[in-house]
Image 1 (cartoon, rainbow, N blue to C red):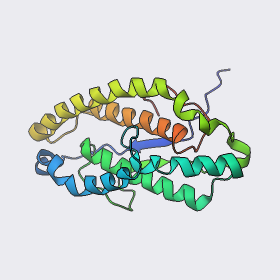
Image 2 (image 1 turned 135 degrees about the vertical axis):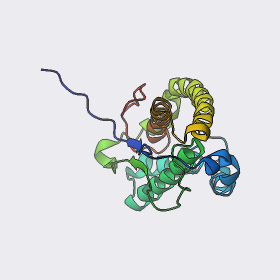
Image 3 (image 1 turned 60 degrees about the vertical axis):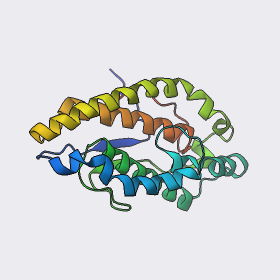
Image 4 (image 1 turned 90 degrees about the vertical axis):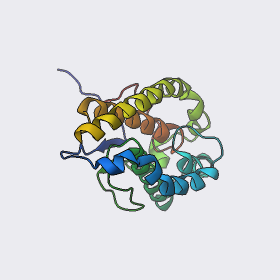
Length: 205
């Protein structure tokens, strides 16, 4: 009997748009996104240098580390705040990659779905591991650097495809969603500290 692997404790998906996307908002996406990107950038400025597009989440890293290390606690309100912040960042990223043409909401889920189960810090999280998780994730950083370069290239291809056909090529869509899923798993492990399970080297759900 084949034993199915336990799903990673983070789920991420974006609803594929089964309709024609707006060519005008696609054509001027980088300009239209400026206000919401400024909001994220202002939050990210609090974090200083960070990995990926997760600056606002990374700024919570040190306080969360100290709570787990010294109190073995991950307060639910703190977790919920961080999760909503991460969801907001993810909606903005999805908008920039043209995955959806709805303007990113600061509170509604829209068509971008990110789920992270709340951990029992005293039983499920090693109090010492957060000290080295960011270091253990270095191989992921290297791979993700190249994956994001590829994602930007294929997003440009998708930009032309949408302008001419109104459709996002499904293969490119799934690849970009997969790259963001991989990145989010690394963020959950190394910075959001919601799990001790090492992220898989995979784009798959």
